[in-house]
Amino acid sequence: MTHTGYDVVIVGLGPTGLTLANLLGRRGTSVLVLEREPEFYGMARAVYTDDEGLRIFQTAGAADELAADMNADSVVQWVRGDGRILAQFHRTDRPLGWPIVNFLYQPYLENSLERALERYPHVTVRRGREVLGFEQDAGGVTIEHARCHGTGYGKNPPDTDARTTEGVRAQFLIGCDGGRSVVRTQLGIDMSGTSFPERWLVVDLKACDGEDPFRHLPYFDFVCDPDLPIVSCPQPGGHHRFEFMLTDGQSKEEMESPETVRRHISRFVDPDRVEVERKLVYTFNAVVADRWRDGRVLIAGDAAHMTPQFIGQGMNSGVRDADNLSWKLTAILEHGADHRILDSYETERRPHAKAMIDLSVLNKHLVSLGNPLLAAVRNLGLATAVRVPGVGGWIRAAKMKPAPRFRRGAYLGLPRRGWRGIEGRLAPQPMVRTHDGRTIRLDEALGLGFSLLGYAVDPRGGLSAEELAALRAVGTRFVTVFPRGGRPQGHPGQRNGDDDVADIEDHTGAMTRWFAKGGARRGSVTLLRPDRFVFGTVERRRAGELVAALRTQLFAADDRPAGSSHRTGAQSERGNDWKSAHLPDAVGALFGSEETR
Image 1: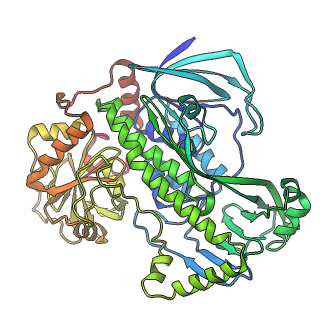
Image 2: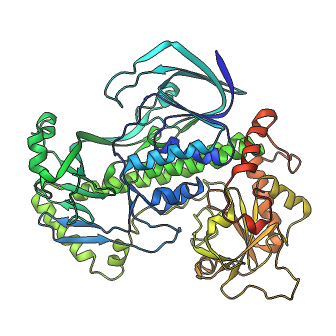
Image 3: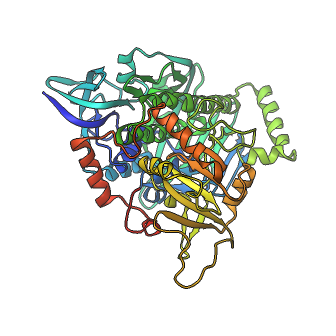
């Protein structure tokens, strides 16, 4: 039996699959999520997200709920074995509208994201379904799946009942099914990189009822002890994680024994005041899939790249994948964009994911030095570096973290102009002031699609009627950004703008500084992609060049009539009816009664 009617089938209900399902669901895409484990795992794996991740969760409509369950603005530090500080990283600014350092308890995050999917009648989640295989053709992908009693999350082979096999038809299949990805395996895609032999014991603790055993461990510590390298991670809700590096002579059974675990955690906490929720010896990989796309089938998250845990970016790399994929799939499904835009998914995401892997490996080498002489050199080097003008600030601001910036010539957008150009870079998200005096995050004024920003001008002024129609056809929102104190003052009955243009005031000066740094002068227009990366910026009189480049890159020179839609029949009716009735929009009043444009 084959069921039809889905735009996208997602395999895997981890953070990447959950994020992608929420992003697509909020944009009105019909989604089926297949997860082979019948029950939620319920244990922490990822422990951290950054401001980029929370901004993506904001786009998914879930950030406020998620952030409420996080430990924000913590200090991250490298310390000696005796606790003396070697170096610290601590930032409390909000360039993207959210805290930069956020420690989380993964079950809270996954439960919240799964509950959020209940808002979307066009998103279906089916647990306990194992993908048996798939075939694609020019019109879509057919996926076979059957009831599965689970694998114990990798502990056992899949227990699948072939008598319950069903088929489903979709436009696209996305494998978010982890490091042992069935989707990647069937595509015959190899992974390249390094598998590290070092073993670590992870111990997840929960405070006993009425106890507060972690008060003296407020910060995230890399304990650079050559005798026993350790990671100490605070988590919300009375949770805490320790990771201890094993020596070659220690066995898995020895290290996971209650006696060993008790001895190790006793160095930091009273074992009688905590419960051990999990103890597990693991190794880690630093690998990237050789290909991320095969026609209508793509992979994301750990299926595409595996990041060591030493900078907390494994989950976040998958969340970024989901953000990149979601708007491009929407452009194809909703607006008829050419499938070739999906080639840019890998060219945009691979270098950044690989850079995160490389930084994580570097930090792993830094933390896990076992040679006392080399460890002493490391300690001296770190202690000296943080005192050097410029270098110390670079470390404290974690400037070594790969910036959200695409490589030249490898992204959808205009070419970057000089080293300061903002094309292909992630735009900031400051608080801005609306015409009625409310303060909101910038993205709340931008909507879920493209946005054309005019710097102190109406961004539509340099466009023809046909060019405006072309932008509206791909869901573009028009926004005027006035500098602080620069909003025009009119007369009774006179309006600044209309229902088609939002006007906001950059009362903090953050956008004004960003425009200036990127060479965008007053009177220029900037086109942002739905993922908030800059497509291009030009003088307003040249705005038509932005539209021409966008149409060429999205539609591969397909000169379709402005306003045409790729969706037909039930797909369009199902998604668009839900969006018009339910899509939340904190800044809807800026655009009159119409919620989506």
